[in-house]
Image (cartoon, rainbow, N blue to C red; front, side, top):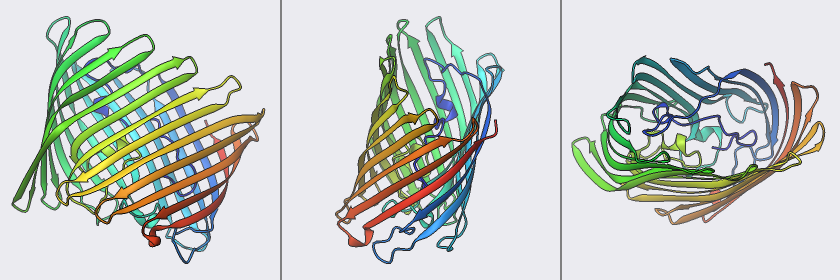
Length: 429
């Protein structure tokens, strides 16, 4: 979600621990020392509540601390990223707010082929997908996952993989319903060549809400991975069945599911990527963690057929300027309530050194939303530009100005916002 105090910043990683090593390859982990930085930001908005009428101006002061670390490869290894902020509004438009983004991935090798994995993802997420991005419409979502993974070589080219994970999802507000789940999987993979692998996997996912609702999901899929000199492609295709029990009322659905991940190095300074997934799931899953532009409607307690795609280009020019272009599209079909929500959009970011110590940064974003239940379409456009000046090697100052505008078939959902922010950023180590 977009932070109300400034531009969205991509976390270091959001992939659950059990996905770090796939059936076929394992990512090369490079150790990084502990990095700690802090930021003090003042942001003025002429429409803090993002209302169509009765705009309220206010200034938020926020303090942020950011920590990142990647341990050395070994029997135990871990990656950590955390960004924690605390904000207060001068005119008390909102109560003091805590902002959290955190990711932890870790595993330890217990025996040959056997390791124990731990993962935790914490986000501020939107509660009502039709509302605006304000503190009143956000809550914290924490997903904790742990369990063993056992890999058995069957031959020089065949491998069997078994895993069992426990997952707990908790929200920061009592209005949302927490859940516990158990995820078990069995997979076989084969190296057909030095660059191509394929296999079969079976997964079962049993979730139980605190309210007593039970939702079970089973997936059978064919998996593949292909690498070339400058391109990597992996994915899966299969079938899934989801069954729910709401107070004795049982309902089931099935469909084709799959995912794809493609990354190509067009040249040494340009990279193209594409990620997509189609799943049968529910609101307490980690789908919105893996696809940051996707938003669950937390007012619903329902099985959801979700589809998401994002693609883009990253390019760095010879003058040290950088261009990031991203396009995304996603759909949520709430099976029980028969409601559909669609989103698609574009985001462009550009940065360029103006002087040796002065950098220009700009962002533009367009998003289209459609809600079929009320036959409502909405469009949101946001732009911002800023300058960062390095006062010292560790201390920088950033000024930004931005504008956001939403148009809608429902006049009450429309708003315009102009904002300005000034921030000091200090790197402790």
